Picture 1 (cartoon, rainbow, N blue to C red):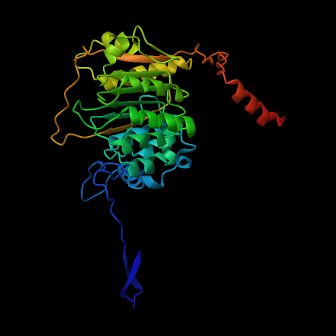
Picture 2: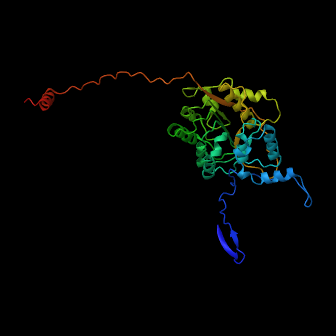
Length: 360
């Protein structure tokens, strides 16, 4: 900030703010980011409602809102403020977090945050933010990510489930090397310690060879692949697997798809429903009433047309579940056979005896 002289006699100065723009074109999101406000219209002249004035003042200063601002308010007032915030399109990540801490929001009050830029520098700044303690689900659809971008996902601390699906084209995505990097970080650095469900679709460089890395994720329960490369059907038919993991039969995800008779259902919606039910049942909770923050990374079509729904479920979905009764057993030690001694010439044997004993 620089101050320049403007009218010294009257004590006025001109203040100039210099701000550096973000280098990433598609990444302008911080914890106070929100879309354009849609405040209620009011006449240019004459009196207007005090309620409209209060709403305008509140939603223009949401960066100053904290949990203490809502303490002492009744549930009805908090619910009314929450409705106003949604009606005015003023629910930023910061506003959602403040209201979520009041314990007055329900599970249907889901906050979705879109991150078009998945570069490690951008994702790391979000993952290291205290707001990311709310993030438990990650959804990445139709977004090409390179190896560094994919590996940086391990920095998200409280991730419970993630769904990554490519566009179907031969592009960069999750591969055996990336899954091995995640597993190494989980084993050596304690990363992804809360990850329970993993769904990977249309990842052409992901093969059955990656199954050997699953046991390094301490909390992982279900690993699902759909339309991935590497001849999964042939590997499953030959019984190729890994110790401690078994193929789900019947497949819970496939059953959920078949039971869902809605036309044009989206696999991402089905997977989110399955993930919620699976985690709730695994923890002995019928249903959770907590609000959910979901991080979404995908490209937004500029032409406004809706993306086509995925209706073809003929391709099999393979789900592997951790075997809780499995215990790694070390192989029994077996005695090695004694190597045959080579016969030596009598003269050579006598010479060796003299050298070892010193008796001449």
